[in-house]
Amino acid sequence: MRNENQVLVTPYCGLSRRLAAMLYDSLLLISLFFFGTIVILPFTGGQAISSGNIAYNIYLIIISYLYFTWQWTHGGQTLGMRAWHIRLQQHNTRNVTWWKATTRFFLAILSFLGLGLGFIWSWFDLGKLAFHDRFSNTFLIIDND
Image (cartoon, rainbow, N blue to C red; front, side, top):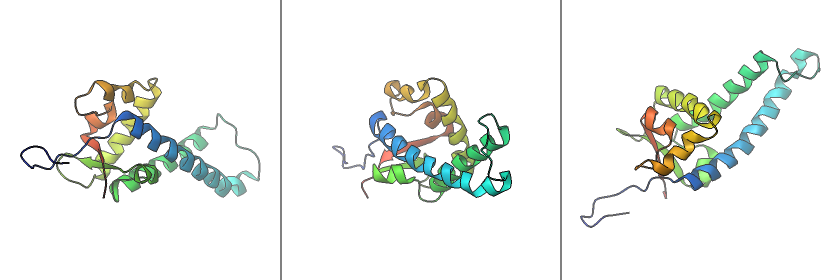
């Protein structure tokens, strides 16, 4: 998109598109959880893993962390983001560093756990940035490439 002075203007991603990509990524992440659980079942003797098992919960967080941060640092898009034409970038470059991706991941968990208020933040932010975008110095753009 170009403004009147023919300067390239990047459209920021709004909340509805962001939520659609999150839904898509959640379905993919659930399938990774199933696969990840199948991988460790031989170590439990085939027994079910209790829901309060802290080691298992940490294992699932590690799977989530690797799913998101690896894709953010290698192309700026998860599969859900790719389907909805969204790209994650840093303010100073197109590529997101591991540190920024890690910061964004853990702040996004806080955004979600706080009744989603970190995402609703984007309705009031001038750049349509969610809480975790604002404080990790990253942003989502609509990517029509």
